[in-house]
Length: 456
Image (tube, rainbow, N blue to C red; front, side, top):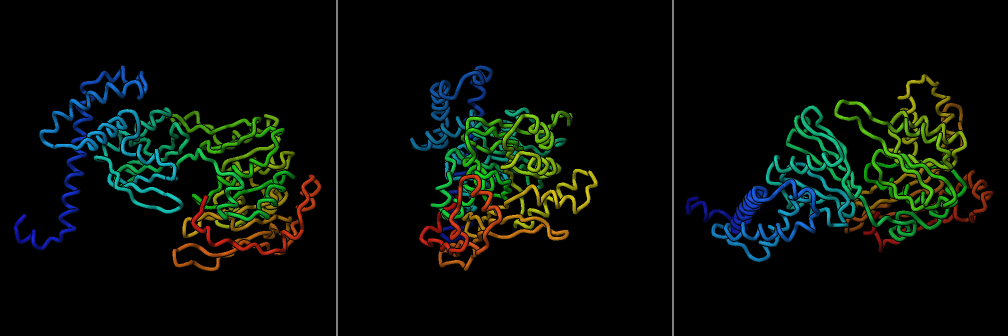
């Protein structure tokens, strides 16, 4: 670079260039150390022992390699330790992602490209400075994930769903479908499951709303939790399931196991994807049908997405009251429309009115959860299905969250309120031995604005 170019370059730009150069050199160094280490180690033996047992020996070898490399790139003690930890993560873990996976505050890890990784924390998306060396490096980590669950990913099978050892869900899509290189999304599995009181503390709903839902589950009402991606549907389903009596037999059905019921008498079922030849897949509908033969008191379907919606409704209508499920929809009314569409996917040529009658008789409540613009998650509506009015399913809203604006810090302002309508199901809840105070359906319940930064 000429002296003229240096004088016109800002100090900030020169510092950034120097930092980028050292980062590039560090990645190259780590790659050389990793390659040299693999040439020295017995890989067959390595796969048979744990990281804890192998780490002392491997750190010793890494130290010798770094002593040789220090002639061209001197390293501080901290940098040597960082290289050692990073290489160990490459051998036994998920490489650069290990640091993110150790952070419990991160809910999603989003790898857009080898050099572009985002995370979601507290409902907000932020870019990280973590990178893979290149697409080949990223693919090595992806192949390690999918091979651990007996799957394969290549050009003939460029999309894969998998699960990490801690239960986190992984979705991968690679070229030619992904134009800019391999893409990976990791939905973290929470070990610190939120309870009912946590949702009240975080102002995701009010105590009266929670008491109503607790009574509804105790009275064995059939409930659908509706919401968009990342709105908190599974969290709400876990909370609702905590109100189920420990004396009941519960069967859960999921595409990827995320529910963590605390009752003892729980049978957990999970779908199975097809094998490499496209055979052997088990869909949710098959599991729902099979669950009906398992003498369940309640059936919980993690999420209805297709034709299994019909079997779920039939289960709700044939003695399995108190069943729960979730659905992707932006409003309670949209949730009913989606159910209509899913049932049509079963190709049974059922008249539209008959489908809606089945929905109206099976579903009692629709709970709408929403992730707001500030990243907070709230129950924005609790609605009751009351029957049919001509060809339309009748629905009335019991509680709602009314947004009033956004404050100076970007937090959503608003309040929860009862609509003033006494739900028809209140009598059924009272008959189950859980009478509710009638004033809960007429009082206003303001949000405490001092806690707007809390989310679930």
